View 1 (cartoon, rainbow, N blue to C red):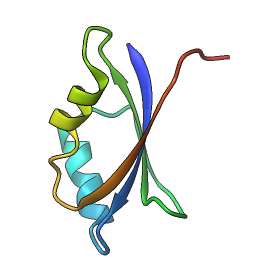
View 2: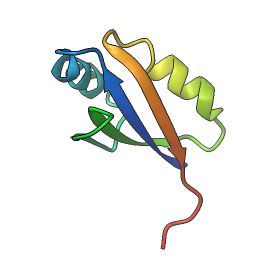
View 3: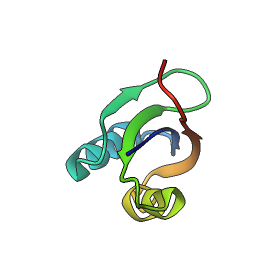
Length: 78
């Protein structure tokens, strides 16, 4: 499994709907509302045999209200 963090910017007024949609899909490990440039911070584990970009495109980016994302891949936990 690959641990990935995705920061999500939502269209104004849609952060709670986006968070609800993510929760219903049950793809996340943790999901937080945040301050700053992005509205949500998503932690998810992608199966080792899956393509990260394709997995995120197919499981996250079709949610209405998502305006932009920033994905951070992780390599080692300390």
